[in-house]
Image 1 (cartoon, chains in turn brown, purple):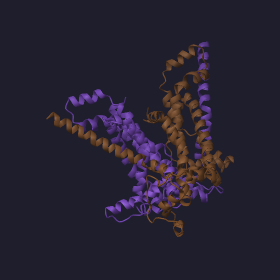
Image 2: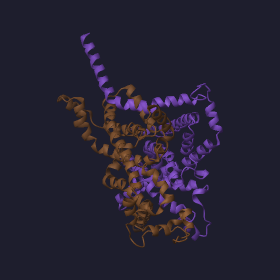
Image 3: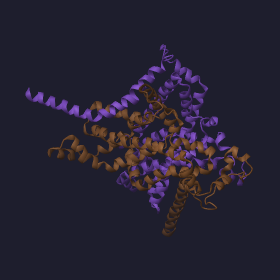
Image 4: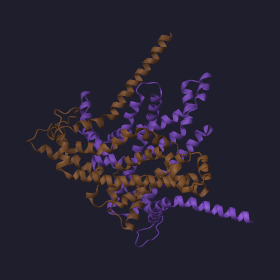
Length: 298
Length: 295
């Protein structure tokens, strides 16, 4: 009897594990496919995926399969896509650089400013400040379709519309990280601050020597979340930038898909690398950061 | 008298310190969000910015007669109503599954979180190959004798969008639920089990109630990310997608191009009201359902 029950429970675990494994494979499959396809020669890519582009199929000289063949392993490993991206088409590297100079300042300054603001919200409680903090939460929950209109009006008024500042400045003041860091800082025991105060430390000193070191991992994890959100941005550049030369790679990649399929996978991988490295380096921080974000009320 | 004065001065000093910490961010938020949003509200009740005649709710009524806006609202609404509940339920289930005793948990977690970090633009190619008319999915369904479907150009696109949405959000939501599940007090669950409560009863009346703040939060977050699915659609199909994939952001983009301030601002105001109503309703439901378990 008990053996039967044991088997039953065991079977359930095995089934659950197999199911989870299948799901996990599905979750990483698109990433793995993108990476493995980036090692195909351009001609192989064109043969497999050329049917995606209408203009290419008229060119009968090269072999193009009617059907799209999604392949795991290239027939021949080749770095030709990468050499083309890195040496022959500086366009992509330029767009990559566009992404970097938008995202890095936003992430760094948003976190620094948020740390200062969160210190204010967590150290000094008060009715008006609670209401303002609530307003920050409401603002954080507004979709781009709402916030981009005011952003556009201000940028126009300040004369920065069409330049990168129109994306960077609102990004720096985005309330998301203020909310997360305030919640983290409110958990720091008051006694720490009082002790420092008795030792004669001023507020700035308390902030720098007690609060910031305690929040180091929280700041890193919030930084990861902010980084990936802006690394993915599509809405803002389309509306706030005039010049397509300034577009980040996230927007530009949609155009290669229809033109340069042969290179697209390598560009996609190059674009993925910073995010993937940050993920592998900081998975624990990321999990921690997501956990902090739980519970609007807390 | 003297003491009172000193106390007063000290309070003012404290207040001054508090506000000086908040000032830089407050100024930025006021300049870039709050003040222009007031201007947006102002624009939404005018006939145009130059003559500035008050027209009341006319702009909103015009919006409700605008076919493109209605289509965008309808598509976004259908997609959100389809994908958000699915994402919440599935991720809750996954969190419980991963909390039970199965091997390789941390590897599985890494796999589930991976889509969160991989840029959308990078994997969009693979989605294109899968959902193309001559693509992988149709080749698979053909093996089962099904007619090929142009997944991105029929009403099936809701399903395609939902799949991509689930792929992107399940990991994040699962992590939130896992940490909330870890916070359920075990003694209460054990007492209930000792008293003969079925596992379904403990789930419904104990665990789910403790999880209700997290469920609320995950739902709100998922709604916000469902509004960001424009990114996927734009990268897949560009400015002018098939009509079942014409989302709110497409409408906004086109209105930005024609610089129709009235349409833009009334749409933004309307959306913010809708969001606040939805969030308010969710908060009410949560506080009703989870009232006995407030920590």
